[in-house]
Image (tube, rainbow over all chains, first blue to last red; front, side, top):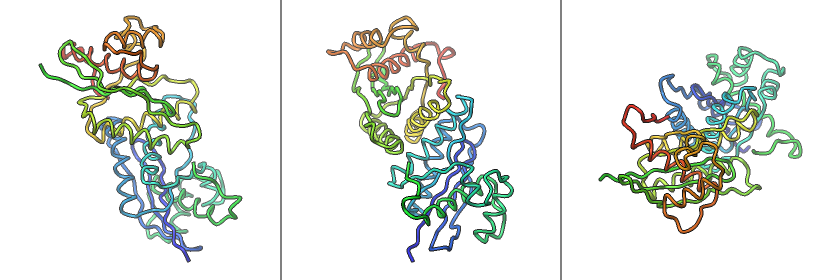
Length: 168
Length: 168
């Protein structure tokens, strides 16, 4: 059975969730998960550089085959969208520079794929992720979202080819 | 007289203007200018990786001391802001990863600093940039905007310290 490694990212400027899972058939295990935290005092440019550096390090260390990001929540506020867009752009470029195909799923699809309900709470997602990956502790919310994105993609990969999503 | 090199960027996903100028006292000259063009068929992730790669190459080749970007035009459309934000984030991270301080000026300030009128047309900016830098040919619009951003920053650097803008 081929093993595949998936990098999941729940992007934000100050606290991006990151996770790497390994999938082998119906078996999934978490290799790493956590957060890229940027202090409130760090200027935007410094945050963006840190995000690039950390994503690049994760790719070097775990050699994932594919990456997944949680789809952008489209704020009505253009300023918020711009800031989130900057962080997203850095994650996408960091993956693309290492030739990782990136997939994107909406927050709703990710919740659906993990909890079975598109409107699940963060707490429910974290609890279900913990169960699905047999973790000893409940992951912090952002890390849980990154793990959930990776799990969602693992499910998608199991679908017949015509039904699978395409890299963005 | 100390020489300083300024990298100017007018960011967009498909055609970012880029320029490097060298400033020595009141003398300015263009070392390079052009565009990072991404084909309409290239996926977003590929465009973002190309922007990162090209900015990084310019920094390696010309060793600028400071970078300037044209301030984000805040679209009312959050989707447009997100896409522009992605490209901006990549430029900011590429500069910050190479320890370049990045300054930002509004399109209005840039036009004011080059043409002397905040509402100047693209054509007027290109013509004035050509004159200020003694170029033989009128630069293409995006490149002219990048040169104008660099010129605007050169002017700012000539102000008393208390009046200068801060890196972002």
